[in-house]
Image 1 (cartoon, rainbow, N blue to C red):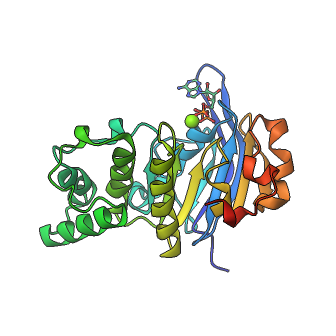
Image 2: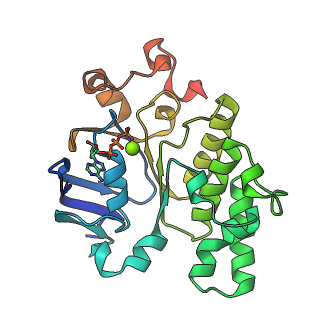
Length: 250
Ligand SMILES: Nc1ncnc2c1ncn2[C@@H]1O[C@H](COP(=O)(O)OP(=O)(O)OP(=O)(O)O)[C@@H](O)[C@H]1O
Ligand SMILES: [Mg+2]
């Protein structure tokens, strides 16, 4: 049987001060899925994300990419699993939008024409055509967030993992980013969206995972486990409460 794209096996992470951030997390992510991982503040979401491409080392357990430990081939893991962090400013490294998006493929030492092609495609996929020469620090919050996605896309990852990507965005900014994510998902990318704000995203997800105190408390279809969210400190989506269908909401 083909192994899943990404899998965590009994993943544990305890910090030196004794904080147990991840406690035996067993999860599999299959190619083409759109998964939402939700949990209250401090439940372990960001720590979990940092393990997915080997940025953090497990205290015990492991992360497998196509059946192989990510720690055995970190450059492959970094390329295949694209992480978009919450702080878009911290991810900006280039003097211009195009140079910023080129940073990843340049590090892969790809030929110039290939880099230019990847950057063009990534800026197009994120709605940033025409922004090439802009200084990243002059972009709006939503545009910066899309640039962070573009920088990761330019590495041609198999899976995109985004940590609270809607923080600080107004509704049009959220809608633009959701459109980008939906288009990427439609074109075959695997998406893991980490948030404690289910309102904006649940309509798009085919799976919802709920985390609490470093443990997985529920994992299934959004409809099937939505009833579990409130007792884990996550607000239930308003649209769902008023009876609107998932897909009507956006
Ligand atoms: N460097 C560290 N040293 C000690 N404890 C840490 C460290 N980094 C994170 N933690 C702890 O690990 C736990 C999980 O943190 P994490 O950042 O993954 O939470 P989160 O679910 O992403 O929360 P939020 O919704 O606030 O972003 C928390 O209790 C946090 O205080
Ligand atoms: Mg976090």
